Length: 111
Image (cartoon, rainbow, N blue to C red; front, top):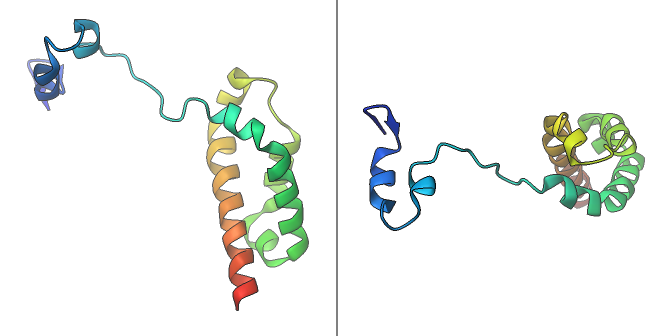
């Protein structure tokens, strides 16, 4: 994995000559899910409606903390740069919280 100060040495040697050197030997890092803010912004109205519906159902709102998630949806960043400063809150707390609340609401209906 590391030899003579070169990381990912095997992978770099395998692609050398097949791609430009800037790619084969580059050290820049990409970002997974880089368009997360645009995708969430497109679904914001749906998320607000879901959170309000889930809050009214009771158990999901009590266990997940939907008040905080609803506040995040109301305090929406003006652009992607502003959103990046709070990436963990929006990308993880909000999305995972809504998913968990949906699951709990579904589970409560089936039992």
